[in-house]
Image (cartoon, rainbow, N blue to C red; front, side, top):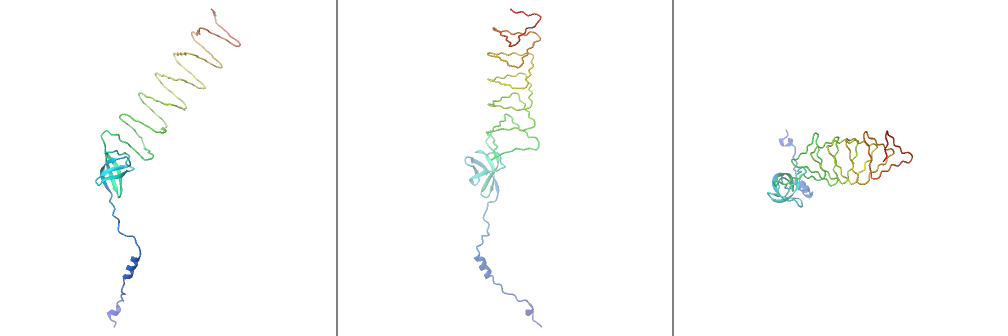
Length: 239
């Protein structure tokens, strides 16, 4: 009979010194995590905006950046909500500012406001639209309603298919006016023209008709015809 010691497998002695020497020889980076500030929210006061946002937080003044979602530009003295993530501080929102101060919506780069339905822009007092280069309106139908309108335009170009205007009174003052049309029709109950210097009409055919009286008066009156001059009537009086 074999002894119990003979049946048990032999256990080799394990020497860890070789493995420790190998690990020590390899230059591995430290696995210890560097300390990092946990993200947090904190309120503060804007102290300056000249060269970036200087916000007074609990730990003292710090430079911050305005988050992309924060469209309201902070001013000095505004109370803001900040998010601190590591070494970076972002201004998320402007909580309150000086009473009566102007609220400015500022976006870096282009800004587009889009709605799938209707978009309304309302103001209790006044709406101003200013652009350094160009303002464009593109729509299928444009409606403008106002009690009074004033426009100061240095140069105006209008291109359209048809124009219809209903006015109770119209006054046009111009230094020079020129109208070009293939056909021009004027209809009025009464028409008065006051020409201070010269009134000249040049036409291929000139036809003047009056249902009542047609009078031509002048200090000097000249009627000249190259081929034929005709006076026709039941009575013709000269002199």
